[in-house]
Image: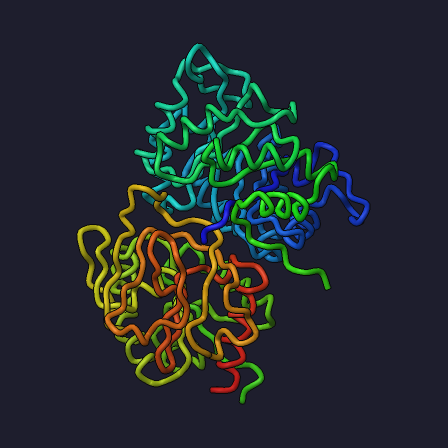
Amino acid sequence: MLTKRIIPCFDVDRGRVVKGVSFVELRDAGDPVELAKLYDAEGADELVFLDITASSDNRATVYDMVSATADQVFIPFTVGGGIRTTVDMKTMLELGADKVSINTAAVNNPDLVNEGAYRFGSQCIVVAIDAKGVGEGWEVYTHGGRTPTGIDAIAWAREVVERGAGELLVTSMDTDGHQSGYDIAMLRAMSEAVNVPVIASGGAGGPDHMAEALTEGKADAVLAASIFHFGTYSIREVKEALSGQGIAMRPVAARD
Amino acid sequence: MAANPFLVVVDYDAGNLRSVERALAHVGVDATITADWADLARADGVILPGVGAASDTMAKLGERDLTEPLREYVASGRPFLGVCMGLQALLEHSDEGGGQECLGLLPGNVRHFGFDHLKVPHMGWNQVRWLREHRITSGIASGSYFYFVHSFYPDPADPDLALGETTYGLTFPSVLARENMVATQFHPEKSGEAGLAIYANFAEWVREAA
């Protein structure tokens, strides 16, 4: 049976993981490769790196990180942040990323989705949608959730899939950072609107929230950052809890 | 048995080429990425990787004059591993993109999932059950999880070709094997320890055969 995926997300600035990852086991908690290896061993099904490096002068640091991760981690990983052209996509994919995620760049230039899907295949084009509730629906925001666009999020989801997106990474700006659960109504509407996998993001406080997103929200995968990075729950604990609720999970390998 | 066999990964611009090379490096094998038919002619082992579309794959193999060398290599009896599109390319025909003739090294077709009730592509980790014993799956438990990304699935004409099977809406053969040919629909290079074990087993086979 196809399992639901658990995906830890890292914010990376100049090749270093930021946002206070605290792991006693790690010599260097800011090293993305060390963290990726740890989460892989813990049972992560995929990884997402979000490059938040402000200056383009520092792009080389993220290139090194992508390449080093691909050398040592043998599960799929996605890189997002700062990808604006098919040249940027090609660079990341050639360095070893399995998928690239685009957000603001897709809104500014929707043809980028078509061009990316045509050149590299839909399977490696993830469109990230940040949205906020408005009236009966949800509105797309860009620039890390700062800029409203007036675009209906469900219509946008349909459009990008039509253009060739292979997967959607859906973040609710309303629930993100609160650890009080994902926006289930939005996830469900999004998942029912498209026929590609939907990754739920924004608001995970624990396994029960994830279970809700994967069942009622009809998501195919859940992404979380803080609860893993701060050690509130390990991936193993999350997977055991979700399996216990009858949700298909890839079991975590036994520790030696 | 050769300590350093000449293991070739066929270069036709497939997206997962470097990932396959990295997985082989991780299990201690230096692979040569090449589009030179002469390298295929003298290889001890060949891997045909692949993601993307069948038409694109066949066009690129044709442009690089690799179609015949691949056939000749397989006919020579030396170990061959196909991955994802590298599996689908072995069959006679794919329904992808309105229909595409493939290499025809194995009898059968490649068909679209075409589900209304399930998402397509079949993307993520799914179980593979072994249907018989084979050295490529040695030491890997039946029912292990592997990473899949595909919208089309193999439908071989001979059911005995199936070495492993997977269920997504329907049950399809996710590993094919006949004589010196093995091919996986999943991506072993993205399937953690279980996937690395596939490459380690293939490398061992190539070493012994060399």
